[in-house]
Image 1 (cartoon, rainbow, N blue to C red):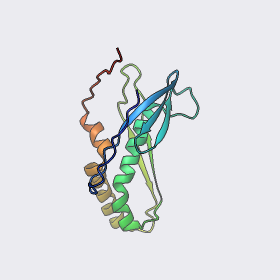
Image 2 (cartoon, rainbow, N blue to C red):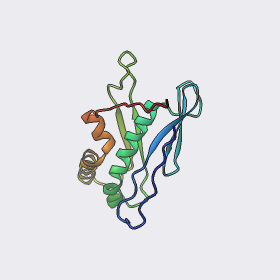
Image 3 (cartoon, helix red, strand yellow):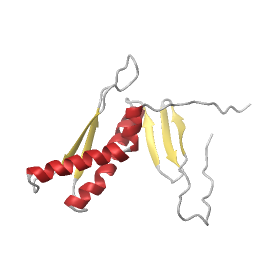
Image 4 (cartoon, rainbow, N blue to C red):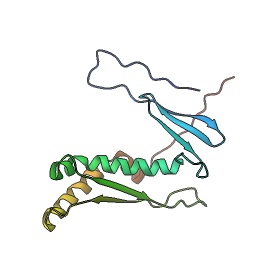
Length: 153
């Protein structure tokens, strides 16, 4: 089944149409994730080269969300061309099929700031991530997940 997003209302210039997301099966334990905005990502088992596992995508989403949430306070203080990398890790608990802990490390060069300025900036960044990183907030809160079936008969 392929989902398609409806065309946005041309008179509505303030709110973009919601993005529709889906995956399509391309082989045994292989899928292509797609969005109505034209993005694609390859998803599959850990044994398959060139794909992300679903767990890896969740971790990348968390790291990207933290990076994007920290972008405004960091660019205000460090300039638009600052370099940052957010590393994320966390081993799966295969008995329970969960990730009991995810660890992020935000790598920054703050060598031009004194200790007090560095601490103020890091506090501001941490607050920004805690306030606006939807992925992190969702994982911390524990989201309700539902599944329904659309069956061709």
